[in-house]
Amino acid sequence: MKRFPSGFLWGVSTSAFQIEGALAEGGRGPSIWDRFCAEPGRIARGETAEVACDHYHRVDEDLALLADLGVGAYRFSIAWPRVQPSGQGPANAVGLDFYERLVDGLLARGIEPLPTLYHWDLPQALQDDGGWLNRATAQRFADVVQLIVQRLGDRVARWITHNETFEHAVFGHALGTHAPALELGLGLFPVVHHLLLSHGLAVQVLRAESPAAQVGIAQSLAPAWPASDAATDVEAAALLDRLHLGLHIEPLLRGRYSELPMVDPGVVQAGDLETIAQPLDFLGINFYNANIVRAAPADAPVPIVEAEPPGGVERTDMGWPVLPGSFTEALVGLKARFGERLPPILITENGAALPEERQIAYLDSHLQALHHAMDAGVDVRGYFVWSLLDNFEWAEGYRPRFGLVHVDWETQRRTPKASYRWYRALIAAQR
Ligand code: BGC
Image 1 (tube, protein in one colour):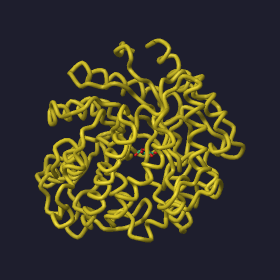
Image 2 (cartoon, helix red, strand yellow; image 1 turned 180 degrees about the vertical axis):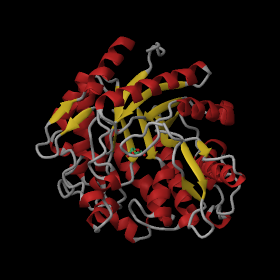
Image 3 (cartoon, helix red, strand yellow; image 1 turned 180 degrees about the horizontal axis):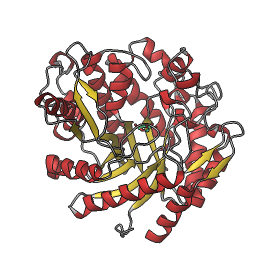
Image 4 (cartoon, protein in one colour; image 1 turned 90 degrees about the horizontal axis):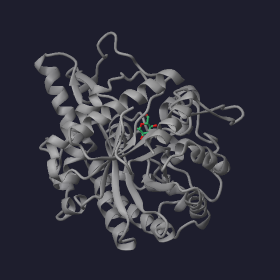
């Protein structure tokens, strides 16, 4: 492996709902994902996240795994329903205690805590009030962020507001394959806008409460590739690009939405775009693969469908194509598009559900691709593997295994994989 710059941050990522379990402990309230998992047919094999990796009870064991791995930072998420069980009102102290213990445990081991403030687990009570369709939810988010930063702001140097507003909006609110199972199709714009508005409001709160803190957001990036040269497929890819970058990165960095018929100006109030486009200290990028798409049949709810990758392309256990070159392309394209407006980048997620040796090959090829992008002038400051542990992969349940550490779902026994040893050696060699 080529050398990365000194000071480059090596880390791993997880999220609360995917690992914690203990959904009814410590005063936690139900989230939209609790509700979704309880509905028949939503999750593969009827699995739920009630136990997940039982991380809530095994923090010390997981801290030891992080320390042994030698990472400089750990990205985790804070479950809103632990901190504010019904999504509003005073903080639930027990919930904050849990994250405080985690943060202190990380700092004691010389690992930087990098919390994400929202990774899709909205309190169900807020969904009952309209969830992200309701503009008031944006202010609610700013309020819970205030409670969190008041407790942890003296120890957390960098914050991430949201994880992947695109996926949360599209899977959860347009297609209904994730919680809260809305099927708004192209009617999802209010959800997008309120998520981004909540990001902007949260940035303002973080800066006011913790002026020295660095603040960013983690967005997905995936170049859209047309499945064929047919004009309709080329158009579908261009549309996906506008729906993705044009609605989820353009407003953050340029204070405007790309022109699209579904952008409803009635939803955007005076000053919103300025709030959304708060200066960022870094942009988190989650990358898995390019999206290969074609035009959908005329009667489909959304005009774009995923297409089969060309024959011979390796696929992960998620069915996703392995296309490392598309990582370089995506980052170089982002730089070309946003130029000086692009803040320094942290790769906040990259990884694959694959057997150990192929998982190593995936990570290795993607780090090479990242290095190419950096050689081409993209300012990248760190890289986080998704994920530390095998975990609850949303609607796919426990079968896809993204972890560097194998988790036995019967016993909760953790066993580091070959990929864990490979990553540990890489971090040590880069140091
Ligand atoms: C999400 C993770 C998820 C991973 C793999 C990302 O979209 O942030 O929560 O597990 O991809 O699907």
